Image 1 (tube, rainbow, N blue to C red):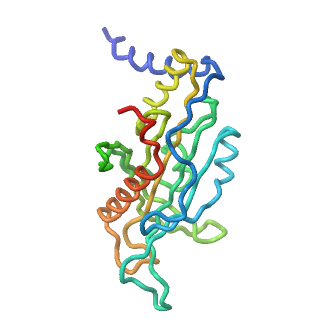
Image 2: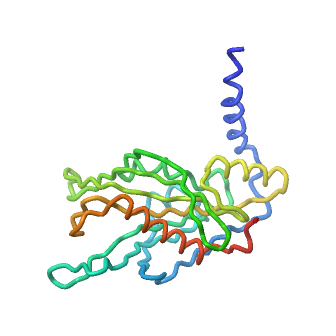
Image 3: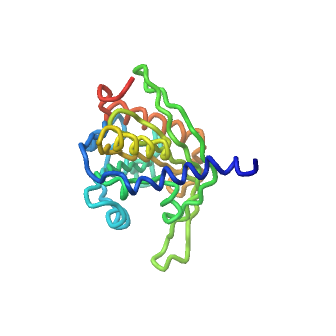
Length: 242
């Protein structure tokens, strides 16, 4: 009887391990995400940035990236020199290659290397307004950012991150569920499904470049609106299952 609780973990490990024995090639089903980012969406201006060396060296060579620093003016807020005070959201879209064995992964794996200490994780539902709702993963972390070249001084900022995965015909925030879909498609359909990992993040609290303190609720509201707009513009909805 004591062995019963071990059955599920053993099954999960065995199932995930079997990924390495799946066929490595098959018909490719493209993700429903549009990788070309706009220059502007609403009040947000998009400034394209390249993928980091760590990303390009870790993931498969046919992985695609679309990344941007997104800014919008804070109404009525200006610096002493007259420049606008800006909100910032970091956007990253990573489209996996055909090889599932060197594909995208959960951000929880790589965020610590970027200085994040993850404090909380939760699911959050976003209403798109077109009769669809998308469940995303929400992370709250504290990020340590070096402020000098010697990396001896750091700025610690609260950060909130929303992420989800876009497949050929579905959107999910469940990495392991996505993995099982890949396995099923390869075994039953002979199909390699390309997935896109979409991540958006912003800081909140007392930020040195903003005069007023940004509350966590304000950060969530901005990310929610941003993700809703991204989903409306960058997803091929007719390709997704109802």
